[in-house]
Length: 611
Image (cartoon, rainbow, N blue to C red; front, side, top):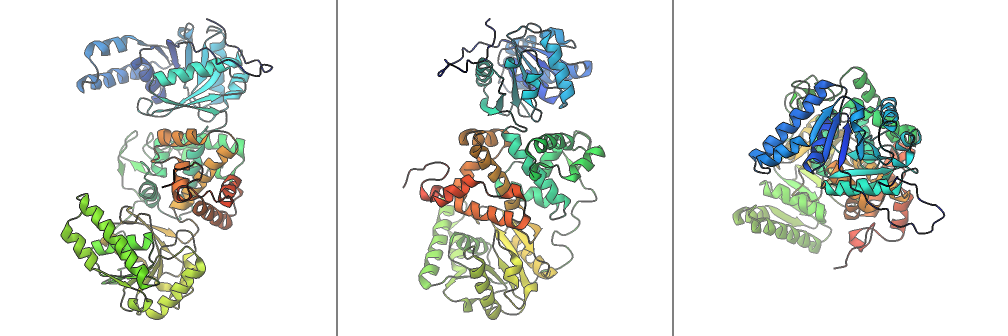
């Protein structure tokens, strides 16, 4: 075989590198990731040697492969002869010399540079000159490993995601020293394995973990500051963003110590305070409370390695609303005529609660009611609602064009434009109209609730009640209490959420609440990656969907939310927290200035066909 060579910089157009097949592959390190990678390779017809100094680890790897292939035969995904052939392609060894004739060696030993360097130094003396050496690191410098190698052009990163057999994403990491032929060969291999390779440069975390771990770190800091409970933070991100796991549960799954190591590497490279590990991560790691693997981390588990949580001293006790009892709510008023106001009115009406829907004019009130009727009609068409229930919900809604109609409302919910002056005018008017004891709620997603409360003579009765769009479908409501909110007013809103089958999470009155405070820095960092030409829109979106389990990539989401809305929220977060890392990415500001606001204008980060 030809030796790998670095490209000739004097050549203006280099031919595409020849792709050579990688048939025999060594996997060094047979922990969870190493076992998973070995299984993927063996299933794809490769000859695999698993190398680990621990006989117990090697035995577990063989047992794991035997068990997973047996299950595949039981489910008729595999025949027994095919299973026997697969098992014959996998062997284990404790000696690195068994990798001497491999086409590719994938190192997945623990995330310590000295250990990885020791492995690569030994491999340099053993393998053929054309053998590709890949590190599975997600935090350490691939360039440093390559530079310390005898043949840096053959060293690259090959970052699988856990569990490797199930996760589609593979990040192929090039250093400035990596030969194109090596990149082409492992990229072709990844595709043959049924994976989606994403080409990235060498920086801590790469794409997926680079974005994911900043978000996880912010969630840990949020919990550490006692802004919200661990259960509410996790529920907010699952229900508000459609994520498969909450951030604190995910930290326990990854390993608190592993997360801290990754963040330390990211911070040393970026010096971004968002990457500086939250102190609680260090405290838990030093105490040996590393998550599921130890039986305790942010949560407590039934046993080490178990996924089942058990109650502990931090678990919620008793009724979710606490000792206070809410005020009786017989009727609800909703102020506004947009999508959010209509959705909230629909939610309460379907729950059998009389609703007064107040708009600025009879025409707007009628249009909002028509929007609700159309939404209910779609639910009937899809079999989610009976015609009788639709009719009852519509009958429960009384449209009005003056706030005077809310004189008897027990709960008045403001859902007008996200403009503080406008909201304060509404609250000042509600203060005059609504009866004593009525709870006044704002649906703001970014403005201070206390500023709305101070526009009234009864700030004790004012609460934030942040629904998510579309309100009929989204289960989450962030319940925001100010320093002046009365306990029974807060309990009233929580009980109202339960009545309409929404999941309330408690948080304090600060910018972004839970969801936006964690979501938008992540989106902003994705924009910075594109701005810095580190990765493409498509690769970043693919990485977060395939590697992070996100239902939408960050740029898909930004274009749906609206770039102007996103910029406004990011400005609010930056203004409140004064963190330089929260400053909106200039690329986002430029797009908004150019009128490229996302799907609603036909162009944002991507272009869309106009309807």
